[in-house]
Length: 151
Ligand code: SF4
Image (cartoon, rainbow, N blue to C red; front, side, top):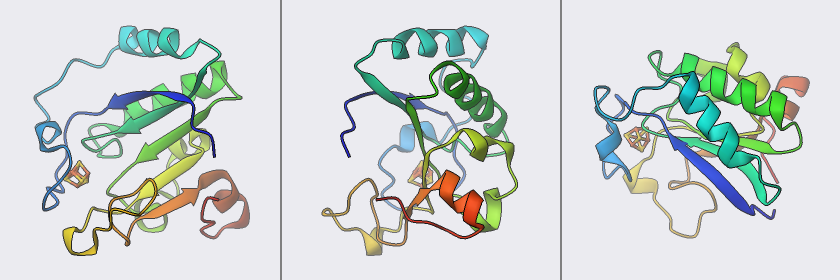
């Protein structure tokens, strides 16, 4: 898949604290910038260029109860505005166990789920850090009511 240019948003705050997390400076919920409508507007503006193929939402933890509302608003507005561009989200939560009934999934194309596990790290993996994580085709998974792996 050609990813082209993507805009990335890092949600601040994560309680998983995986060993050797790639981004521990995002653990603190008090850090980062306030998330407001202005933030969403800024992201929309950045994404409007044709060469921007999609939006990546990472963390921290975009699906933490303190962040999921913001993630939902952001992804929803993005898909309404840019239905032909894609939304990818990285989360330590599990699609089937934790997220299946959440509204946010309606607006996500691909979800990379599961915590990073140092012992299962493999640098040759695509889009994920450890082999326990899954790269999920969200819309087909919802349609088929089972997990469909992306690719
Ligand atoms: S879930 Fe992600 S951000 Fe949170 S500790 Fe694990 S690797 Fe780091």
